[in-house]
Length: 210
Image 1 (cartoon, rainbow, N blue to C red):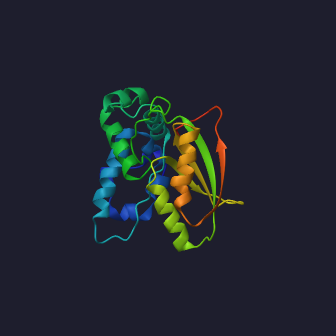
Image 2: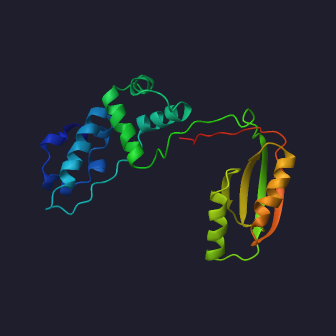
Image 3: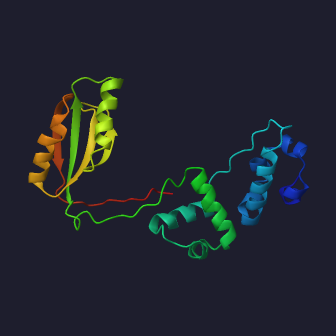
């Protein structure tokens, strides 16, 4: 059947949907925001049917979704009306799209970016950590400690000669020295540390390329 002859969602029966993958069979219909809403409502109705074992396919990101994500990464305080104007859609489909992006985990949270220097936390250090023993129990104890330290803003389990990479924000060198001795140094499973001090920040993007 040609794509321009495909039926409206209201005309589809459960048996029809069982025979075809909606996302593949009606790809052009998902490009229209009003049809996206119709199919979403139909999918919810279909999912409640006890007589069907078909799993409705998950819609991927289209160009409008990506526009919304880019706009929200630049300014998460945009109202639905302002966001709709930016992506050239009406407010209802934009609202539904944002809720879906949140529900499906594309949007994890909304946050405010603070100026570390104005808060006297502008001294940045990358600290490489090697544990004396590395097993599940020891690793869990270390990561639990790190999660409770506010000066550590990022922590990564890495490959190579060290086990973890920490990003630490502190007021100055003296504070960081005390932090090493009085905080990190108190963990008896740390074998060695290597500190790299940031002299100048060239680029620091908070957004993810979409």
